[in-house]
Image (cartoon, rainbow, N blue to C red; front, side, top):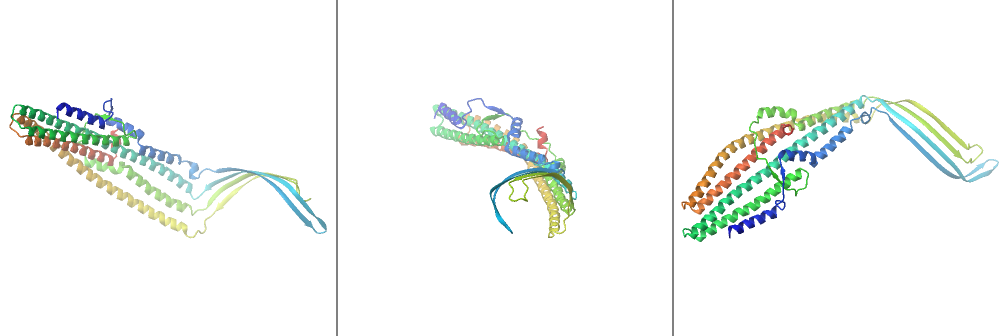
Length: 444
């Protein structure tokens, strides 16, 4: 297979996998990806709507402080047939006697004391509002971590493509050298065939890697809440922050982590539930008032029935309700509230223990990957140098094609290992910042 034909096939395969490659592609930086994600990510948008609902619920009326005023109006039409019998008189019969009744009222009810239950309700609504904000923040931090990981996954896959292309360049040079040696009679045709097989294997690996890159881009587009088919290039290389300190991160995690703060609010909500049960033991005092109007027009069925009747006026007063006995339900509710307080405390401790463990694991992974990163960087230098020497020795006829291929594969493996370790170190850094709630500060 000629070099020109191989190049054409490679270009054709690339166009099939990346139909938009020939056109100008978007240059997407990490900062731009985060900006798009914060604006479009569906999980963030849903959490924001829930937060808005919780915020709208924090009103005096929803807590029970304000009165309720209700207006009513009715109009009733009647048609009656009647027969009345009297002692010493002939029966009186009426057919189709009509009557019209119109009534309206405005009623006011206002609870002025309920054992401080309305204050407990208002405190509960405020706590739920804070919990909604914390959940939104937690969702944003998780989305930022996912977007960061997905972005550098694209960078990683692009780096692997570059590594394979470097290997293909060596394979192509090997074919050209083998062909030249064959023409002068110092190499057998089998060496050309072997070189072409290795070259095609590298191109096949490139096509598979391009598919992995395309999938990584689709995953990132999904997190950004946009069309998965959008193609783009990345600019950033993977740079790892080497200055993270476990003591600083661990000390700030409890105070800053939104999950722990939400669970702390759950303890407050459980305590408010107990206060609400206690408040329900007190009497409820309210003010009631109403204005009533009614008018009735009717065809009299007898001499004693009025043809027209109208009443209007208002009333007002106090209402008092006192719980005396409700089947010991208040005692049961109080016991359940105390149990809920204990359960919320246990949930908080469980989450704190889990986060501490995740922090320890993430930091251990982070420090380990930093050490591996140093090792792989130095190993990469050696592999590159070894591949160059092997290629030169192959040109001079001092190295077999199998030994050259081994040096070439060693370089590719070393480069892929370096790319993977750099990505894993960055992922560990991102996880540490997510757990300690410093990832959001890094984007501001």
